[in-house]
Image: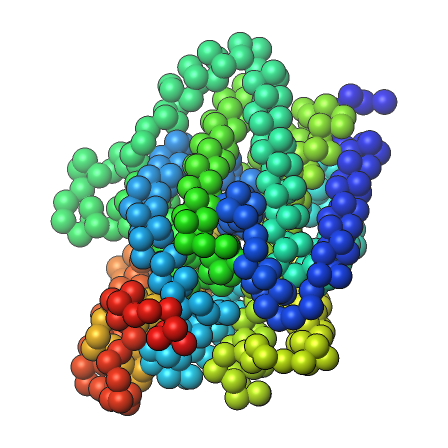
Length: 550
């Protein structure tokens, strides 16, 4: 029997891990007595599991497989995204956490109705639902991609079977146990993620004849250690050509830091996955402690993923991958060809853990948004879910939440099953293009609401529509020949060539600028329809006593 690749013992490791997840969901299922328990966990979750859960929820299997692939392709410049925590931490600890603690909302989008109107709340919640549902399908597909690479089995029926199996597992324990089950399964998955990651790095170093010194020499000479993008043509370029080169280079320091900052600022300002965890903590102090754990573990995670990417680059410089292989497959290929029996299962379990920890958080948070912002608000007419309910009414809310959870799981599984039939490209580019279409617009809406007194509901809607259109244009222009043809006739071929080549790191930046600028100008032209009270900006919320924000 071969000593490397995927074998029965590896499959056993994964099956045992999935069974434990279902058991955790079943354990917490008896403790879900109300919508508050399902969404907020009774506000009794400690800061350490919250911090660990945040890290696991916001770093998926996509990161495990694709971050090494990006570093493999472009070098260490990609992990400069860690620098985003320098401005992010003070913003989270001093702005968003106190803001939401005072509001005591069930959903982040509940705030938008208090600030603007129900239309803005509904638009934002729908943006979130579309973003998370599409993303969940891609995240669920990543373990399948890793399995295919590790086993060499690329049969579409096998992929569909795995997608259904993983989807049923994650939907089941999330549906049964609510936010508490999600948080505690994330803690387990956090441990598995790091165990698999460090094992991956150790095996690569072990497979290198010269060990760490040889890895360092190869990546230094490549060069792959530069913390700035190397653009050879920039030296001789002038004027517009320099601008074109900068925006079309795949990864630059400014581009990646901006993309990650917008990603993180969106997450910690208006992503229900994060806000829901803020609301599950016992106090403001605990929420701030949780963010410290989140920041430290996230930085370590990205740094080690970067080291894995560099080590794989060095290894495959000596033993090249098959010709024509995509960078996206560099981790799965190494698992299949060079990983010892048993450890392959551990790393595949780690990739699965990274994916499911994000997927369960997304399912639970999307369920809470559907329940609070769509079902309760639009169908029951409640600005905020009723809390003084009879036990039977509370059980009904939990039941509807679980049914919603199940429906979202079915949609997610359907998307994951369809992905193998789509035309393939580099996965990290495709995923980031999808996310970029939502990051900027969603964050722009909240920034206008929190920090601009002049922003009005109608103006923000105009800005949001413009921002989404802008992000979609930059994200998918290169894949829309009809649009290129129209723009070529109107603006010329140079216009088309530039926008077709714009890097996947930029669309979210352009989207947020469009929302804020257009939304603000439109607000000046279309004043707010609410003149009965001052706008509920961040400053006004922080100046109020907690009961005044109800």
